[in-house]
Amino acid sequence: MDTIASLFSFITTPVSWVIVQFHKLYGALFGPDTGWAWGLSIVSLVILIRICLIPLFVKQIKATRAMQTLQPEMKKIQERYKNDRQRQSEEMMKLYKETGTNPLSSCLPILAQSPFFFALYHVLNSIASNDTIGVINERLLESAQKAHIFGAPLAAKFTDSSSKVEALGSSITDVRVVTAIMIILMSLSQFYTQRQLMTKNVDTTVKTPFMQQQKMLMYVFPVIFAVFGINFPVGVLVYWLTTNVWTMGQQMYVIHNNPTPGSKAQSAYLERLYKHVTHRGKVSRRRDKAIVKAIVAKGRDRNEYERKFINGLSKAGLAAQADGTVVKSESTVVAENEDGTTTATTAAKRQQPKRQPKSKRQATPPKPAGGGEKTSLIKSDEPQDDTPAGSTGKAASKSGGSRSRAQSGQRKGPQRPKSPSKK
Image (cartoon, rainbow, N blue to C red; front, side, top):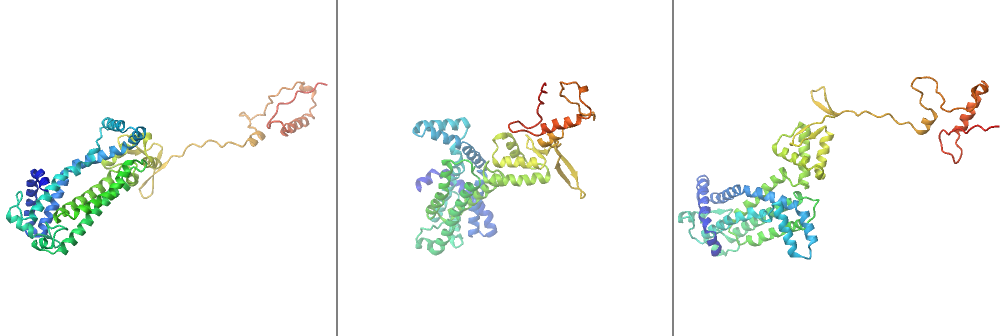
């Protein structure tokens, strides 16, 4: 630990100074020697550090989204060059360079937080060893050793002996109960944070080895925290539990307001946005406009949830625009109700005339537009004068009856009359 402390000695003094400043504030409220004053000082240190790391957290989100987008291409490269590891690595690096992504960007918040973690560990370890460090002088050292959090000294560990714990003014039972509860809470918060990321904010349409790795880490990280947590002082456990709770809340906010495309969180978000837009008839927040704009720009590349959102707006008489706004569609008619509210209804389309059955069209041909009698289009070879007037109707009925009855082997419908036989 001395080697690690020497590596992070450049940040030990600033961390101790920040703790002392917060201790002055909380000491005036709760008393300088209380566990509340020192415990809240550590919590405030965590919050200050995490606020400073928000820009890195935003970069982490963008890097994670970019890596999820590249998963199908990465899988193709792995299958294409599965027998050539070197070529596979070269193609992967080429893909990262072309898309401007960096796999290490997702680890930036953890890497940036590590120096503060080891500096705080060394500060609390020095307090337990009765050594001054940074701006913590002998008076503050004595005050910190008297501070207890739920009966456990600030610098006590789960693995400490009974004599060492008694020297800090506590019992081994209190120390182990408090540290065990804090280790369990720390592991559970880490597990829940990783679980909500895997179950809610992952594109379920793409199955890649990256998802399997994340699922494995969901169970590995809590075990690691539980194993190493027994060697952490109570003050460090307070620090790590606070940062886990902060990460969990921060991730819940991101999942709720800016979910990953194709995930269950996006489905829930678009359902809320659809209800909001159909109720007010417009997109109010700038963040919602940016998401609608991105959905419209995708065109045919929209996923299932995005297509459902766009189709729902169309059925409600609304249309999403390229700038992220929503306007009323031209094919809607707005009707005002008696209570003053308006209802958008789709205009009725012009209906085409119903097509008659074939048998009916053959039986009753349409009358000519002039309303006169139908003229025959069939020429008769014999002169009309030779036909008796009385036999005209009988001949017409006979020929009409023979035409209406279709013989076997003949096609249905009106047939061409046979030429009269010459006698």
